[in-house]
Image (cartoon, rainbow, N blue to C red):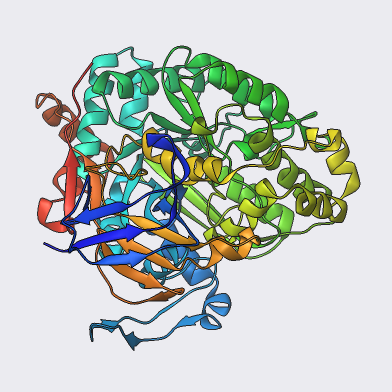
Length: 550
């Protein structure tokens, strides 16, 4: 078994309460162990910072919409090529293209080069699961998984509308097991189904045309089912009315609708705007942060906007359509029968634009006002708010008040004037807190017992940074990244390629559901039910979690 002792580094391991202490980290057989023999080889990390590998709880890296986005912007990709080369062991490293939506190999290499060792694709429809797995199989180094879109699934909505809560719960379990997905994703609950019917749903009590169900009932039913199934991650929800002035009231009502149940509110910055629907947006962040602070069963990732190019890529087709009308540029939309849809629009966030500046400021409000960093996760909703490669700059904004103040002076002054940033928030995140919001926190929220920490039994996924006053430079180029104890990155270069694990859940379900579901799909769909099922052999190095029902 491979052994390694990391010595001399300052360790930040919040799950185990270690805050910058000089400690030894011992590795054997791909896991952290308590101790090693004296003659074990060592890696000298003196003058360096040691953290667990990063965990991205919400990004878009695989599946049908991601490939559509890759095809939509060839001009950005052809100027950013990852060359084919040979690693230190003589193995060939594949070539690829980067841009805002990198190819599979480039995605794995660039996450690893940033110090991240796990990333979760946030929105895949059941009919897109096979493609998503094929892409994840082709994404090296990082561990990964995906969340299954279920907030507009026709069969599920009909069961909820009919009050068939048990059948709804069993369908969720069946769908997760069939797709080999990790968690349940709800996007604009009922809104995409309404849009397909020529209607709209924006508020929590708007009824979906043709179905006697509204978003309030959908989110409560799904959150309850996820809890009853004992899934490791709570319902992962993208609320109704994304991006619209006044949507903070909808988000707050959604939080109240899941009272007492676990829920993770994703890219919450995009759902935190005050003002009148047809007017100028303002910040609605403060009230949402206060509610989040007071309810420990709730969590969020921020979806921070970073100035520069982005790609709006969402299972919320109406939002894609709205953005295309605003920008007048190219776009693409796709409909997944009986399930969901997606809209993809290239976009650029500009510092002097009022709305873009407001979005940037609202995201920072969430970070700076949140009292519990364990429940507020760093993200840009890659590539919606910006590339994951902008994480080091975002970390600098959180850790360096003088830099943040300089940036505030560059943006639209009226946008900032109505936010908490105008109050001169002086909070600066520490390295310990950064380790929480990028590693320990997301791992805990995902229920990943072996990730996000450096205690015995943890996966030996470790990032080692030079201790640099310039934290943006520090987090941009780790000195070393270890995946399962293997040194995969050194001085920003891939040294050795490994393949991570695809994580998924395997909940049990009532088999009597299948004949009912088979008839429904046969009556209304064009793809037979058996084609939804992903075989174990289709998941490269798959690792399943069997949740215990509650």
